[in-house]
Image (cartoon, rainbow, N blue to C red; front, side, top):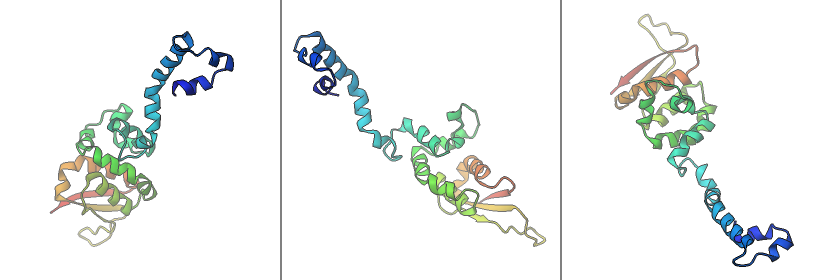
Length: 180
């Protein structure tokens, strides 16, 4: 708030004593200076809630709002070795996941949701999910899926497995294959 705006909030008797060089004048000037940083941030609030424009330090907070923090154990003070696999993707992928979070949540537990999640997280297309896996005897394996990932996704295998474990139904087993 500016000096004059703060002055308008005071009783009239105080407003009359606001003269250059007075203690009240100095106090109002100090208040204006103290509120400037907070007002600057508040004027930019819409930028903080847009995943494309938010500062990098604010991304984990946004991710936690849409339940993506389960993939980032460091945000929850846990230590899981494959955390580096997700961080290696960079903040661009995290921004895309935050944008897609509502659709991912709606499709959670489905083959389409798992495929969308894998493609969004890695930035690679070509994931295929086969829900009718046939072993050698040609009987469909119940509650089993085969996930075919592009060969270029092999460098992100730890992340891919973590996503599959989190997004597939708990009773479903899976095989992950990388194909050229």
